[in-house]
Each structure stands twice: as structure tokens, then as C-alpha cells.
Length: 201
Image (cartoon, rainbow, N blue to C red; front, side):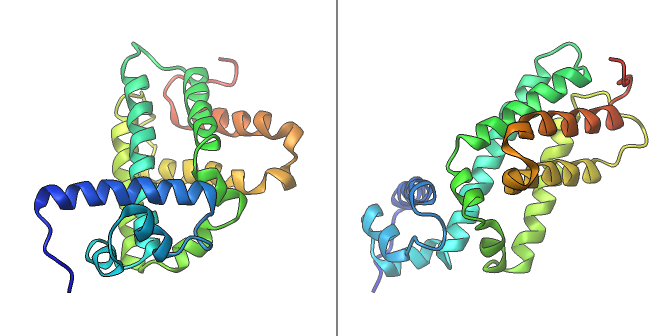
């Protein structure tokens, strides 16, 4: 029988689980990491694990949401600290975000093409909640930008997800040209959504 944890213990274990999950994602990926590994590295029982998360995939997804929230908050802070943001500024800021992702534990999942696998293992309502979460973050992010009246923030959020998905196809796009392609796509998006952005800016 799993012992009852105090609130302080729950908070500590949840934090530790997420740290361990992040390490395992970076080293082994989704498929090769087991619940047994996670509980051994965290120092809890398997029964205790399931008191916190219904599956390892749910834990990994929670870690990804935390990471996404963190990087977008940093981006919103960078944009909010400027008097005005041009299409070039927006391009460089979003490009830096993708570069940060490229150096993170997330890239092991990208290289192993495990995003689809992870999403297939999760309940549909969790995925829908995540997309709503994306949209709320996007609204917060774009509140600091001068967007055109016709812009649908949900479409822009989906467009940024689509740009991110290009990172799954670096080889097909071409490694030599990939950074240039990525900047071109981001700048094209900026010109479509930002008030006053022009092709000659």
C-alpha cells in the first residue's frame, strides 16, 4: 500500500519526477525510458508513481508543457521590453527560440521522431487542452505586438507550430540551407501578421 504523502512531499516528488523525466528524455527518449527507470532515479515506488501520473507519457507531456511555457514566457518578456517590434526583431526572437529548442532535451525526441508516438499514447482531451494552452500563450505573447486587425491568433499559433514541425525534416529540407529557410518562413509570417511590416522593411 502506498503511504500518504504530505503536501510538501508531493511537491518535492513531482519536481524530482519532472527533473528525472527531462534527463531521460534527453538521454533515452520516450520509448526507451521505462517507469521502472523513472521511479528508481526518483527514489519512489511504482505505486507512488501512479499516484502522480497515469503513465510515463503523461509525465513527459507535462514536462514538455512546462518547457514550452518557460520559453514562451521568456519570449513574451523579450518582446514586452521593447518600445516597438519590427518584422526583423520578431524573426530574430522566434529564430532564437527555435535555436534554444534545438539545444534542449526536446531535440532528442525530434531526432527520434517520437512526438507522434507520444501524442498517440495520450487521451484526446489532453491534446485538445494543450492546443487551447498554446492559443492562450500565443494571445499573451502577441498582446505586445501590433497585429493586423484581420489576424486570427489561433491561426498564428498553429502557424508557429507548423514552422516548428519543419525541424522534423531538416534532412529533407537540406541541412546547409535549413537556418536560412527557417528565418525566411518566420519573416514571411511576421510580414503577414504585423501592422506596418512590409517586404522592404
